[in-house]
Image (cartoon, rainbow over all chains, first blue to last red; front, side, top):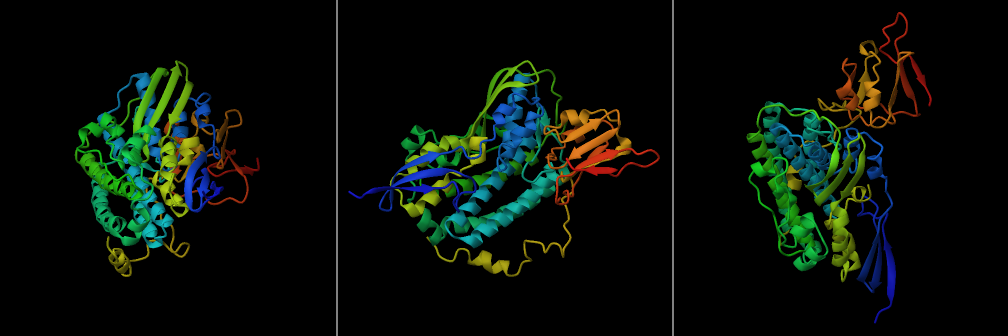
Length: 359
Length: 126
């Protein structure tokens, strides 16, 4: 039996945009066990909710993470709206869907680019991010923000978008989707991509469920689970279906994200076509009182917001369970038996977002 | 499994313009409607302090007695909460980003006697 050695992986590593540390227990080139540790970028944002005005906290909630900012803002707003028992206008719900799906597309494009960079396909990485920049230009034109959208507020959205601009956006998004199809051909068929990703980091369906995986990581193992089925925002008014793949390997996770990108484009087209007229916000009245759990689907998976109000302008407790935190046990399972050279790729396929995880 | 799947993308790229701009030779054109930087118009302000109360980072301070409005751009996250709160429309977002700074300067805007007062009359270090 080979001698066991421990190789530290991260928190600074070329495949990691954010700090996550793994102690890899190795036997020769094979990982026997992976011991994760986090806590490098904790900022105490949940504690801030106890001293900030609940309306000001919306701006902080959005800044939990740069990539998932839109849906963090939406989740916080939905939680407060439930505590205040207030209605959100239909147009605001549709606009939330449009921006939420744009957030998903830009996040998946970002991840696909990072994955291409990790397996050494630099040109593919550049082209994917070039396409993402074009989408971000539309986000900036419609919301005012490029990374932090600043679109959601308690009771609706912060700005309305003219129907003419929305139609212009949809026309350009259709051109972008055609361009994405060209890149997708490379991601799904190229021999170099498949040789690095197929059969690597397999997460069987039973293990995915037992380890509490969420999002594309779970769906790539064949489990049809997506919190958008709850019908929040306007998801109950557009046609869509949960995308799953059965293989559970790194390649299946690429396939899920590629197919979800197309589906997000389609949801935006449908939402713009059905966009109702009317106001985009209702003014909140009173102070939040009671408890509520909001469940939303981030690009990385299910996110849970727990809010507890005590009838004052400060929340008593604000808690976020982020998708990356839920995916870390699944990652540990995937890494067992993997080769050292594949650890970077496997780690990246859960799309780790450590800023969210540590808040 | 296929080979050369990227050839078409690479080949067509040869006949397209670069995706990047050659700044500063080509001027940066901001996206219309972007929240680039905060702009203050002193003559419209009634020093009600609503902006300072709404600011989630404490970047704005207002002195009602001296009629002075202070902004720390290092703290400002350009969330535009103050712009939404301002009833006198003295605050707005300029799509251009703030220029880079080589030091921590707090901008103090005052309406000087007999002057327009729309430019910072005093810049001081924190």
